[in-house]
Length: 215
Ligand code: CTP
Ligand code: MG
Image (cartoon, rainbow, N blue to C red; front, top):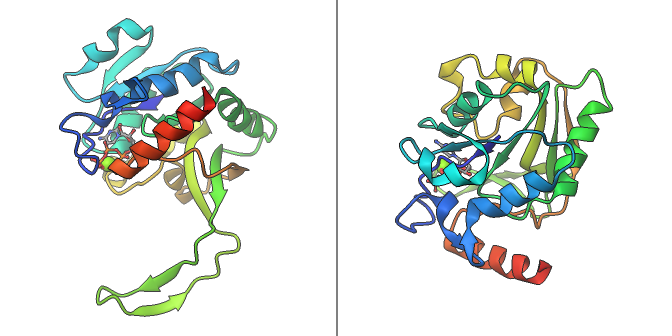
């Protein structure tokens, strides 16, 4: 399931981020290529901005109107998904690879008691906690801290339950946190930081360089 229903406000491209051009094609298409090529993937559902489902009509995927917040879009895509293991991915991460998708699925499949497995990179910056006045309260111990990415693989039942409380969806910055809250065991698949998220214009330039280098 690919979450592509955001408006891309911080990118400021004047249209939905998933359809902004990146290295010659819409941002979303880079992720679609990876999902199509991943041996563990059998069907693809894409959440688009409401009313824009037609933008993916020619791509051989199931389209669904997304919600107002990211996890609401994921919940709507999940309704159309008949698989036991599902992978959630943000269209905003165009550098995802088939190998990474397969790796999170296989990590989850190899641990029967786990609810999910997520790609994440070790935090390399020093992380400080500061008040609203900009004054540092303290420095956190970064060992054991991970910067979480997508793809995230879940047992569909666990994800369905985690997304079932509509009040919890608006504040969720990933789906795994909703599963964790209900006591679901989430596993980390360590990954490089280059699976970056396109948020601001700088990210688009870096992603373009990395994609052209890969080609
Ligand atoms: N997303 C979604 N439905 C929403 C909001 C976000 O499917 N209602 C998707 C985006 O399309 C993106 C991913 O969730 O692929 C991560 O969200 P983010 O990077 O915040 O994208 P946008 O919400 O589009 O950007 P912004 O917050 O700057 O508006
Ligand atoms: Mg957003």
